[in-house]
Length: 577
Ligand code: AMP
Image (cartoon, rainbow, N blue to C red):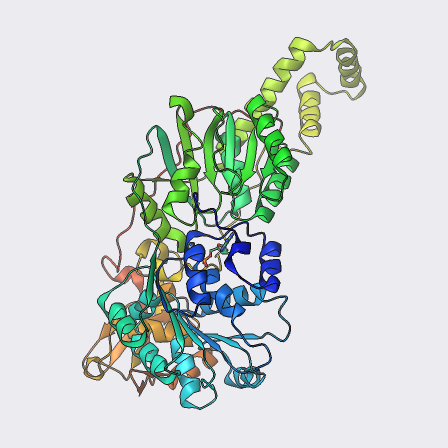
């Protein structure tokens, strides 16, 4: 990413798409986009080694949109995705990129959704279908999905589809699409079965792999925070309040995000400014000079705008949005630790971005330590210290004669002792910017696609569902069933996040599966007739179980790393978070 100089306007995409990208705030193509877009525009098949966070969705969506015939109201692009969440996300991305393309329609189809509604939407003739394999195959079998005009097929997160037991469905669907179609396959890993499919169904695919160069990053302390519960901006505030820093650079993905973040931080009292490609060279230079001279402490930048930035003061880099690739990460954190100084790099990692974290660790050959957020007490303590500092400055520099007299008078008139009066004044002084953080909220369950990687981790499962309903299903080993088939089918058909699918036991002629207590009747009815390995499940309730009844569970409890905050912070008057 960091060294790529390609612009979206160099890629031959039509003006409607370029306009949408501008509105999205995308500054320049990510490496996978720069590599894939020309190939897919050319009609080549592409085999992309890429994970979430690399910008792979736009890498296939943009060129395929460019090739769509808007006058034809029939499916022309079919995207297969392993989960309902990804299908929705990809379909929203298509919608956003095509917002200036008149008569464009995209339709997500996934298990658990009402067939009637899907049929109605299919009749409207969407040009792009994004679906989970099971449901797409259902529609093919019912002859409700017309594949005759499919020009391009995308397999998104192919290794996940394999892991969830959908690969046979995927192959069947591939065989049903026109032979001369274009195919793009994206996968974070390339297991043999995926390679086999690519050989069998793709035409001389061009391989796109963004090389992960290994680089060393010395004298930079690297930590990460797993995004959960607290939202990112509140987390950032807490970190900035407790971290000791001189200059900070915060990396965000889009130009829009740099501006939003800068505004939010300024409102919280930080000397912060955005740095992005929408700003003229002149203003960018002035902004960097203000950072150099100490008029600004925090810059919020995109990768492109921060290229080559060399400011000795920067001692903390925050990767607010994870970079697209390891090279960009190394480039970003290289903005600190200049001139032999020490630096610190903080990375925000959403659960679905965990793979990128591992890739970074491999590329830098360094372990990145997990941190928690500074606690409410620590933040309060910091705010009190900063307030104390202000008082010391007032004692030293201001003539307090008038106020001293006034406070004596007030004390007398209000018949209150000086401490009580001081407490009331303190209360008033901090009212707009409280010294205390509000009490912790219960962490919210995030809607993000955190499902797949988290599965089987008893740490995550604890406290979420201790009592399970155990069911028998009519499909067993003799039918060729594997655990992944059960997980994949139930997750997609019943819309149950696969972290909420409990213990699965396979027997020869049947199997058992634990599901959350009290599932709605219509979900159970739907699962009754859902097929696994071609056989109806015939779900039948057996009993209730408790996860604590089982020794060990499916995963090991990981020790949580405690936050470590050793240094006092440097902070302006920025107490409200
Ligand atoms: P993906 O890897 O496709 O899941 O994309 C990850 C995130 O990066 C999404 O939020 C996209 O909107 C965003 N994104 C993709 N390409 C770009 C780009 N060229 N510039 C800025 N953000 C992007």
